[in-house]
Image (cartoon, rainbow, N blue to C red):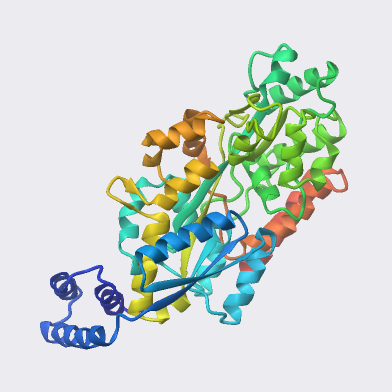
Length: 459
């Protein structure tokens, strides 16, 4: 799409005035004669446009009642726009959406994720939001760095965050107190010693439980968070060449810690290798475990007195390790290439949708942004939203807003976000499990992961 096409779309959508259109056009080197002709054509088109617009919005299956409620409120404020909504399971969402894109199933707006963006944008299935919705550019300065990074492809932002979160180190403070421990561990070695103490005193047979089920996409993010927390905690260099396969790497040390905790000290529950998110949460709720790594919103579940008799005991600490780094990730509202091809009316209606569902005007956030945070405890990508008293109060009911914010400041987007990252991710989960179980050596697992990466990079 040319610069003139982008400018015309902005004019038709009402994002630039006629005067601004001319000044920008001149800056692009266009003559006033050409610009005058374009303005006249746009005026004629505008007279024919402005009718009702139907938008298709696709998400994964979370908070469906809330989404439908938000859609109803949006439609009430925008009676000329109707939103057709569909949802699919998170576990199948990637494949379902790829099938929709390839088959050209009508899809205008959709949830997307940092670990799919490169693949979907490279294929042309998603459009860069900042090219079509100018307000996106003004949002960037208020995003946490990992949020901007996770929504950027080839230097352009493709999303407005629906949900942004970090992987957090959570622990049962009651267990630590009963074991005579003064506070959470600061390093992985200290975690081992604390867990051995807790185990020896009969407080928890397996003090550590982790989300490592191969079919759960979160498993690679837990492992990567553990890598990030260590000195030199990187998987790739700036040219996307693997560094994790080097002897003594942070990745190797992380695998060794996991396998040793599973097979030697036996502080890690073997069920971790088959555990998805919910079983890990339930295991912590039951008091059977002391330490885990989960997305931060799970702390709200753990400390919910309505569902857990141990509520109030679950605290969050920085990730053990020298850097305290962790993975931050973003799920975002995205616009498809199909939407852009529908023209100005559809793009304009979608712009209003995106503003209502994920934007802000000045210091005022959209009602949807605050609703997800206050009612559902979902993390968010905006730095300044932590200044909102209502948001702080809501998060402090189950956690520590200062600690939550600190974890976002320490977080990084996953290394290696490329169009082939999803394929490498799935392959790597299997190799990591082999190493945890001692079926292959740490170095052999990392070599296989590096070889796979290089193969995908050359393809």
